[in-house]
Image 1 (cartoon, rainbow over the protein chains, first blue to last red):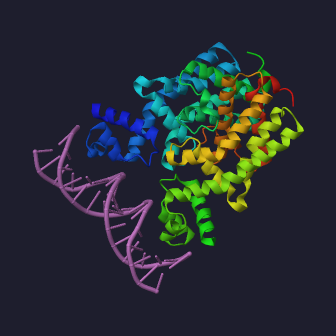
Image 2: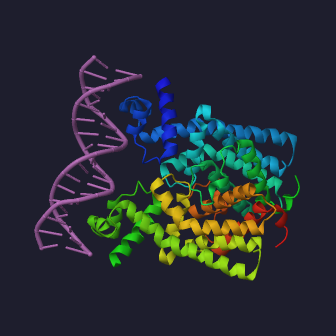
Image 3: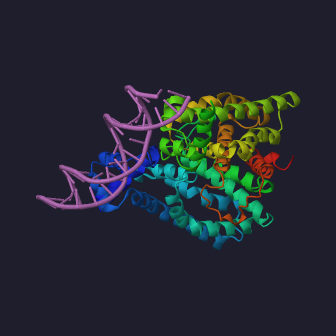
Length: 210
Length: 210
DNA sequence: GTCTATATCCTGATAGAC
DNA sequence: GTCTATCAGGATATAGAC
């Protein structure tokens, strides 16, 4: 079990630095200083290893989102927009800050997965997102009842896209001059910046409030 | 020259469906019904083929952006936010609609490249974006003078992220239930939806106007 | 559980005839 | 310009000793 977790950690980091297909099992086992065959013993295949990486992180992350949403929904109905957005974007961004446990690497990897056309992963990840997707769609619908479902759908799509780009992180292609990209910009500040941006985008009329 | 363009077209499509590393030269030459050695004769290497694909599309696309910005800047100063955003997001989205010339495939590929950690491409693409990046940063700064540079940087970062996600297209992972993802949603409508979202995000106070 | 050795296949690239 | 044939290396996966 120790070896298994060690492989997960090292693979997670390497996968976050290079694409899945460009990262070989040999590179992983060499970096982890374990035998090549250990991966097949513990996971069965490279794809199964990737599955395990996503499952380990996504389950608690999305459970945290649902927990925050539960708390909000007993307190308010409907949930105020700012709080709703924050409960959705904060868990992944906070996980990305968790360098001690490798969360930073995983979130980078996750951000890329949103746009990567690797079919074998898409289905697996979609399943791990199902409850979050349903619950939040209903919650946003309750908070923004004046939007028709199609318009709401598109705005949520834009929201997910913005978040995904933030997750893919500082090693992403920087089209905008990066003189202001300072590492000192901490996670709570980023969460607030992003939340303000999304409030404006999701509901222009509500942007002035809060 | 005919073979060369044919290879470019076929490669562009295959690269948009699978990641760069998972798409082999053999798959490309088989689909294009040309000889494997033809790629090396016309381009020299797989990486050089990828360069050529990006150069062919990115140069006119960004020239179009700068052309629109030029036109706007002789007409207004500063350029209104909505028009500025539209001039930035429309060229790629319109290109994505150009199925006759394969623009749809390229834009999908481009959307992914924003978050993919393939170093050899990043530098090349960044160079092709340099003038656009500089000009637009100045234009947004003139339109939104009340934002300090760091805040503006982050909002533009969010904007690019949202656009990138839209470009990566309908085959992207759909976390939000896709019942409303109808293909009939045409490009002009998407441009307007996205522009309205971005107006709200970039400048909440201006969202109510326009 | 861990390791060595190996099977099988696919990759990008190139040499050289036509 | 196009083709065949081939090289050299790296990939995943597995069989079997310890």
